[in-house]
Image (cartoon, rainbow, N blue to C red):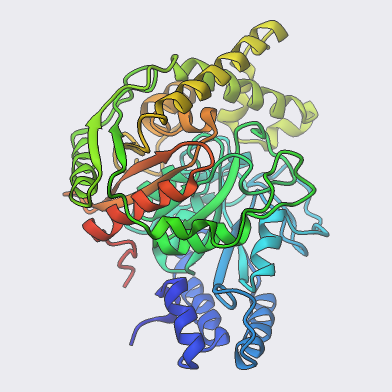
Length: 464
């Protein structure tokens, strides 16, 4: 028999509709799976057993009455601990944050609850989402389900591990420079960074001008359903988009026939990629071509995005660390404090120049997408790194080992999705990244769905 916790959201909904499985049974299966495996993986910051089972019982009543709130009603999910979940503290992976429970949900959590989704609890994050190795001072190391000696990636470390371990079908991550797509790639799942503004955000984090929340799932279809639930207007976010028309994501199922796809190898510099990452892109390109897309190599002619994102990232982290009284900084991640101390304050004129160049980057990508519907490139430069490595050069690691393929799309604010392509010779997941023009999340999802169907990569780690 299949463990109900490992089923997709679409499969669960079909079983609920037939009366073959109940939301309470599925939720209990997820909580039991967490209980069996999280001692080894450390993906959960909070598990709300009582709250989840109560929500599942309410969903079950709705299904029995034939009145589910959405196709996701009763489907279990987790929320990254950078976001508010009412009744629980928002610790952000830090020993320096408030331990008091918050009173209200973040907009993305509210969207899930409005769809009837059952929230199991909160997943771990790197402290304030600052880095890609999946550990934090508050909870320690989160380990990769495919190989516990390796990192999940971050900052959505717990969400990546929880999805690959089959804790639930749906997981919310956040992404300011790759924090959804990096753990998605290293954990072998699907991770969508939506267009900036598509998913409302509150409260704002350290990287508010480039950060988004988005789905982390084991299938593209589940990510699509999840985006539909959370991509709704919320007055708390003054930068969020109006709610889209009904079934706006229906186009994501339309395939890629006739689309133009650019295989990109430069993002204002030449990001590193090992042979397996390059081969993953080649396999994905062949899959898109076989589905009727027109695939070619092209260069969007961007400025050096390392310099731009380095300034945004470094200044945001310096401001974050400096916001704490000096006596509390000892509670923070030591490499974060050290980096903030190395970072010189940037004069206003220089920072405005960086912001102008960021807008020019977005303009260049918009012009590029007048010729190409999709961009295809690696999501990460290599497979998952060892999880207990000492972190000594985060500024260098940012563009060499962690996020060289992801942060440009945060600067341009366009949608980008990581989709798995299979396991390498060491049994570690590999994947690629598909990006589309700003607000064309549907096209990115369509490209990812074609790659997913063609390559049929495993997305559930064999935990035993």
